[in-house]
Image 1 (cartoon, rainbow, N blue to C red):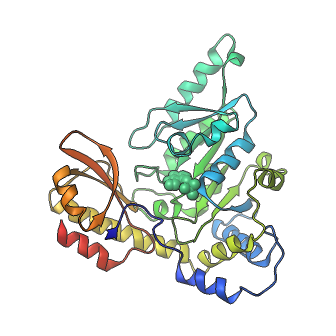
Image 2 (image 1 turned 30 degrees about the horizontal axis):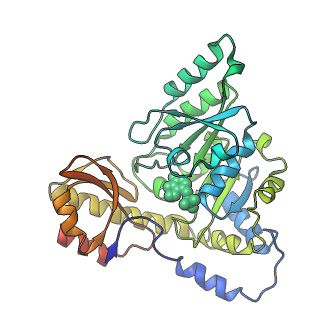
Image 3 (image 1 turned 135 degrees about the vertical axis):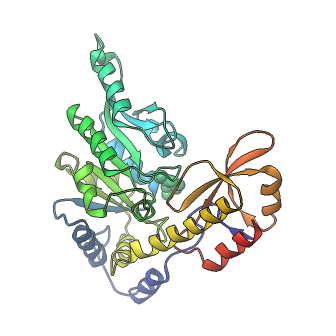
Length: 341
Ligand SMILES: Cc1ncc(COP(=O)(O)O)c(C=O)c1O
């Protein structure tokens, strides 16, 4: 079987494996105080062209979202998020388990906008007794979104302006950040990120690392005592060197963006092939995820050889499937799928 159902089907980029082996017996301090983590942090800061951010490398996306968001909120505050947002639908209530409410708004192709956010916040503060309700304090967006769509810089700046106007934070979930920034439907470049939000993370697990996400904190108010918080939540890895070395490798010679660009190119090749064969797209994605409308008959036929992710049932006859490429997708597997369409 050839799998296209998600973007974490393989282990890690060979350059990471090589460095893990090369450094295996070198003794290093624990808990992310090692030389590799220090070097990774310096390289990421250099790529961001920003020396004033704090960076903490954590093990996974849900863990990073939960720790980042809950650390910023008091118990009576909530996070605004698209109804399709990962924290709302696919993180098993992690945010709610720590006592913070998720305030959902309707998405359009995975995105939310500044007007929707301002409306909710305005309504809250116009109440006679707003303190009887959860205070909106943070906005969560994903770049790219769960539907493979992207925000433009202007759209995020508009959202950030609303956040600043109402003393709220903006957090960007970048589980697939590399794929989003390599897509042609955004004008955001990596260096822009510290200027357009309060904190964000650079996804590693889906973008070449064995595991790991680099959380970048821009707003000084959010930086204080962060390592205490990570440790208390059980996320300060004793062998933090394993996280450090992965990001150090990904941010050497632009590896992170090279491998993400390659995945995006293969995804577009697939997208065009599907379009040429007459398939319709559910969302117009330029990232590593494609969402194809397919008859169930066709899906069953293709399933003899390929694995896709069943995204949504449309009716008895058809469904939407998600097809992902990743840093490890091969040209041969893409061509094989195209031959079978
Ligand atoms: C946008 C987004 N955020 C967060 C996560 C969570 O990552 P993990 O499965 O590592 O907890 C995912 C995983 O699919 C994701 O797609």
